[in-house]
Image (cartoon, rainbow, N blue to C red; front, side, top):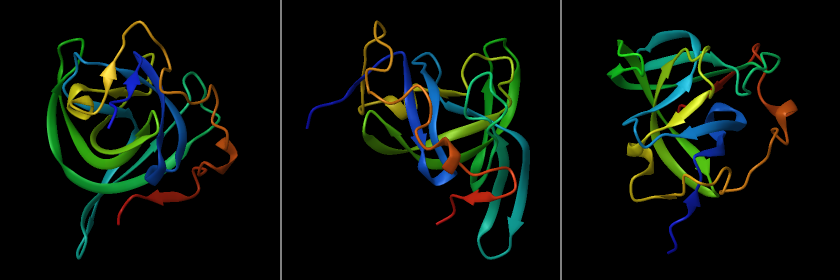
Length: 163
């Protein structure tokens, strides 16, 4: 099997969260992967365990598309941000489609309002799955705008990644 090559930024899909396309920065300097989210709440489901409910804007500098989602809580992770601040973040596990490959990764959830990318893909998610060419952008293909952005879930409806 040939290992796919990806660039320093890529279009990815989060199918179980209802996100058709989100631009992600491939960050080998970051250990964990992160998704921009707010209105994060933990809901205890007696027979299913805790679930994280959250809201996100999949497009950079565009608040017109809002996706509400939920996924099982995998745990909590202490993450040191680029400015040196230690933050305790909820962790979910969900499939991501990047360069045509569907892989399950863990994502920490945090607000990334001031950051350039709504999502970072860290080295844990990349290890042994992809070759990174930092001279390329969007080597894995994709789109500049979600082809079916109208099908992304509006704020009124929750998308559940629970299976």
